[in-house]
Image 1 (tube, protein in one colour):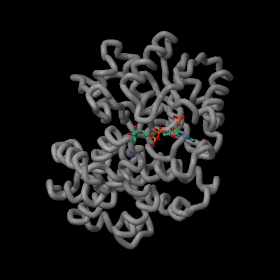
Image 2 (image 1 turned 180 degrees about the vertical axis):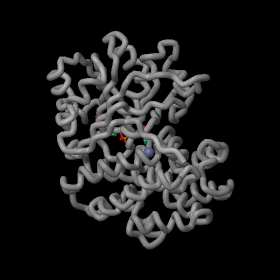
Image 3 (image 1 turned 45 degrees about the vertical axis):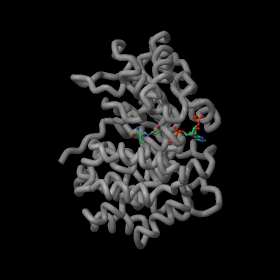
Image 4 (image 1 turned 90 degrees about the vertical axis):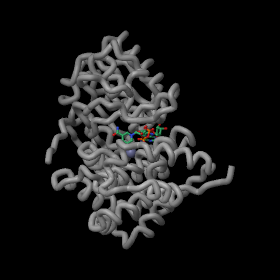
Length: 370
Ligand code: NAP
Ligand code: ZN
């Protein structure tokens, strides 16, 4: 058993200001990466800029990170970082901005590697510039993982890049959720839930790393009724939702995600489904298959969430993220590709069959005839 998280992580209100000293020693010139709007709207960009100004750290802002960031965006941002002579990268936003910041940090120190080569394995580990992560969604936990998920549209691939990039520092503050719509909070909370469920229903699950998803699922269960209700989320829950997401990130940092995430990438790439729902559609059926292999683990997950059975789990997910309809030809194409995805199938805690994969697709997606 091994346990390792090298990121210095703080979770508290006004986290960026309170930990200004930690932020100011990460580097001397910063590239800040954000999406187009949210980091301004929720105050996170202003908080980071104030701290950098107070410590006389020069910075430039790249604010063009799109959802599911692309190799083209990463290439453009690294050019800005090089021109500015940045020596560290700050990702502020959801998983997209943080993942893009990680990829830029890698290319910054490896000028011979083009953004189009990010998905290729290197013969030896590549170094990267330090990354600071300031999450503003409660889903990916990217602030606590070594993973960066990038889309290469040229080869129609959305996948994690094979490089280990833990942020040096993560500053996690629930107050940034105040500007988020309820559906964004629900979508991203389903992503965090999936990280914890896939971490337990995983061949790499062990007594050390289980502490994270088991505690996180209990916290998620405490947020469940607020997520399911039609009312807005009470601001008192923001910190718990963010903490749960970070804990879910720590969970997959040790096990990695499994089949539902493997299935989600095609749904996002080819049908434009946001990440959280794209994973969540497959979660109940994957859990049902795993009940054949590790029934006690499935029972444990359900009881931590305060649910009686898998049917209740599926109904809860439907209420949170609805259903997804795709053409049958597309579903068959996704299923055929998934049957060859050994990197995810080998993590299942049992001998998953082709029929099991078909079962998950049939149960999880609504199909329209072509
Ligand atoms: P996201 O793609 O980062 O952001 C989704 C949307 O939410 C964007 O329009 C963004 O607006 C907006 N937004 C962000 N924070 C907001 C806030 N506080 N208030 C209002 N709007 C806000 O969503 P995400 O689900 O967090 O990240 C998804 C990406 O992370 C996917 O590419 C997924 O594959 C990846 N992922 C990574 C890991 C990992 O370990 N690295 C794990 C799971 C998933 P702006 O564009 O204006 O910012
Ligand atoms: Zn995810």
